[in-house]
Image (tube, rainbow, N blue to C red; front, side, top):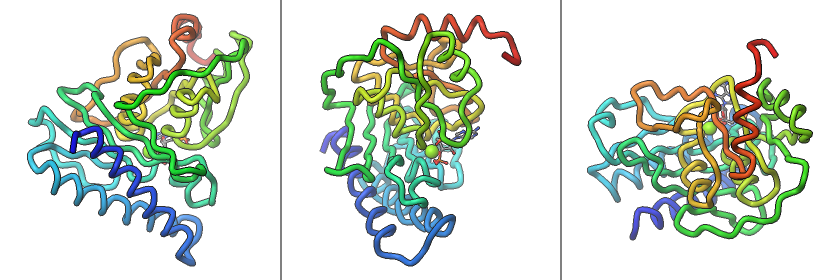
Length: 248
Ligand SMILES: Nc1ncnc2c1ncn2[C@@H]1O[C@H](COP(=O)(O)O)[C@@H](OP(=O)(O)O)[C@H]1O
Ligand SMILES: [Mg+2]
């Protein structure tokens, strides 16, 4: 099985496990989120270690093993991105499975198990991008919308679309439900590695909000901000971010 096929297979399978947990247990709220995290993480980590024993692994739900820093190939996974939304019975959550090679997000898969039809977005199977609306739609966190996104959307005549999960937001841009996903204020490598791999394969712009590249498998996995958008919007959005004074 190719690396890309493995990523897609594992993301889909973990998604099915998560649906089974949500539908088959009496748990709710935080307890349901924790159970989903544990079940999906155990499945993904065991499967990756069995299939690719020489590669490094970074998971949101595992103690970080610094051995990954000596590896060229590192799987970066988020067993449930949007745990809050998963536990609330919503559809905006995702499973992320990515492979970074020498820090670059070379391939990945993002499963959207809450949507009808077992949707798995893959970097090795790019689809054509739908038409854009004239006024850009900016995806923001439901619970912590980025100050920059609010200000840039206003400056560019755009509209804000709140949604949970970094993966669900990035895939909404790929699927043509929005034009821009701009986040600041904090995230980690697992929140964006697979979504960025898929977005890049679809021809989207992906960078930090100062325009610099997103580099993975760093010692510090904190990745405070990112911009994923239709390529046509990259220059205007980056210019507006640069114009923002601190505190705007
Ligand atoms: N300020 C912050 N610091 C750390 N992580 C953040 C963050 N804002 C968002 N995230 C993480 O990014 C993902 C998407 O967040 P949001 O839905 O608010 O856009 C969530 O991942 P998890 O659900 O995997 O924890 C969330 O924890
Ligand atoms: Mg996450």
